[in-house]
Amino acid sequence: MPFANLGLQAELLRAIAAQGYTRPTPIQAQAVPVVLQGRDVLAGAQTGTGKTAAFALPILQLFSGRPRQWAGNAGAPRALVLTPTRELAAQVGESIDTYGAHLELRSTVVFGGVSINPQKNALHRGVDILVATPGRLLDHARQRSVDLSTIEILVLDEADRMLDMGFIHDIRKVLALLPGRRQNLLFSATYTQDVKRLANSLLHQPALIEVARRSAAAGSVAQCVYRVDKDAKRDFLIHLIDEGQWHQVLVFTRTKHGANRLAEQLLRASINAAAIHGNKSQGARTKALADFKGGSVRVLVATDIAARGLDIDCLPHVVNYELPDVPEHYVHRIGRTGRAGKEGTAVSLVSGEEVKLFEDIRRLLKKDIPVLPVPDFKPKVLQPRPEHKPMAQGKSEARRKPRAGGAGRDGRPSYRSEGQTGTGASPGQKRKRRSHNRSR
Ligand code: AMP
Image 1 (tube, protein in one colour):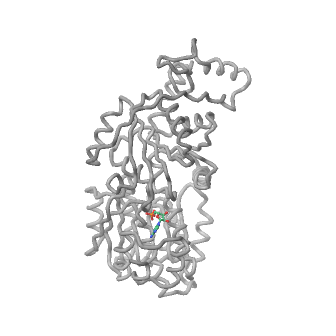
Image 2: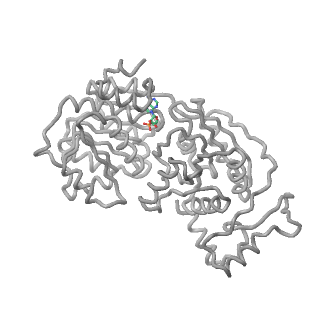
Image 3: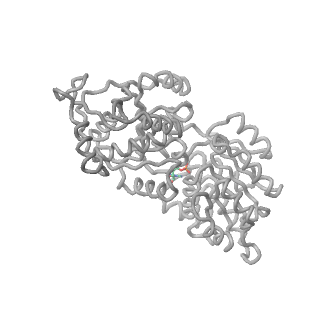
């Protein structure tokens, strides 16, 4: 079915065509007509299914048919899109700008971690569609820079993740500021009890839309597993990236510290990498993502929370450097690849300690994931850490030298490096590392 059959106006069709979209995705085909009718929607759809356009296109069309005066409407948007993360908010905002390029509508994005004043100014100039993360939106409401009493359409995007991240109280506070009469659209990848409860309290006779989970079942992601000892993972990852000539890889670690350390080690292996996690400033996160999308960063190392909502077109490779504790997160992670029907690979490096987690994931997917043999490979020698002072450098060089005979236990040259055992760290430093490792 072509887009024109969805009843969208010419300006939107033009913007869609400019994006190279030829036909609506299943969620778009189902949601657009229903939203245009003004109905509430409960949609089961993950990131990557085209869900943003599924709500953005009809909202833009509904508002463009009813332009309004800005005088007297400062700070009073007509649609509110709530998202769990800053990255997702920014991406949704970009999509709305893209789809609405030929319409006289205004949108803006507000999220925490950046200065509030430019956001206040944008709100004051007047907006039709406001995309926001819950905490910063409440800051604006408290400071009276936004008036939510004129909201006609509310979108909860990735509702399950918002609840996972503990936003239920903030969401309830936001709901209390909205008018009773409005259209509600709830998008969620999973239907947990909490999501059902929220949906029941929010939606009026919603149209139920479910699209196929884009995961193992969708077939566009080729998954495989390598059984690799914890200590050998780094060398093997470097080997996979080099051998496969992977140019864009999203790698998941369990901890922020682990993400930093791995990114640094990849840099030392001459693989351009950046880490993205909750301890990074918003500016650093945005830059890392832009560099990754632009191709100057080859590997983005991320924690689960930071990776939520990342929209990276045609991402070819995802690596689970460490498996997530929660099996559902595996589905979210590999959902970063094979997007909108494109091919992708998801490789998991599973150590002995993670076998049980892997079994849980297999049970959830109801699918066998092939376990491939680890090929023989020669670990790449890492460059010295650039920030080392000459004295320290000498010492660390000695530590990195292959052990006597040039080979480790497995017959390959081996070396010790930061983060592996016996680095000479003091007990205090080790304790510090352990506590870092616990923080996500
Ligand atoms: P989303 O699920 O909204 O995060 O969208 C995932 C990706 O699919 C985005 O990169 C969109 O640009 C892309 N996309 C959305 N709709 C379509 C479509 N109809 N055809 C091709 N790509 C699309």
